[in-house]
Length: 264
Image (cartoon, rainbow, N blue to C red):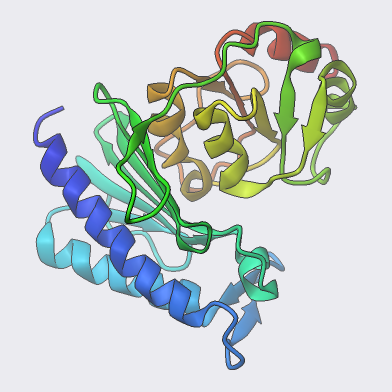
């Protein structure tokens, strides 16, 4: 990937800016929250973060496109930044520290890098195709390389998800009944814990492009596999698609697909 270091440094800068805005508004007594047409909440922090990141991208890379959660998509070209200003807004507005800014760069037909920054958890993860996946647990620690677990049987596997809504045909029950442990760590965190090797399976029945684009390079570069529940690839060009997402440590992927297909 040409110029990957420049792109990663810029993505880290975007994450720094996002953290400074979002942390300042977290647990603020005057936080303003409204409801979007899809009945999900949006806070003034979501809007401020995306506005700032869009401005920085336009200034640094005026030819690049942007797909964000809160505002209209710009013209899509060879290079597109995909942003979720606050993944886990429901947590954010209730004072739960499990939320993050998600930043991805798509070049042509690949999502080449992803950054997930969760300042209230003192954690930031990133991955670049061909250059590994990493986590920094605080600004005072050096990054460590990520690797998924070596678990090979479902009965020994830990499964993480967001909640039980949206699952169909007992697919959730199939994974729950056949795994060792189940916990709703939720949103981005389930998939980052998978990349760290702390859980072995993470899955959600429906996501938008801004929810999952940044996760993909991190999971894959940590050694994991990802797909939709039917085994097909995730769409990376359609911001209006809402596919399912299954991530595993790689060893368990086909076993999970087999379970999910039985319930299709």
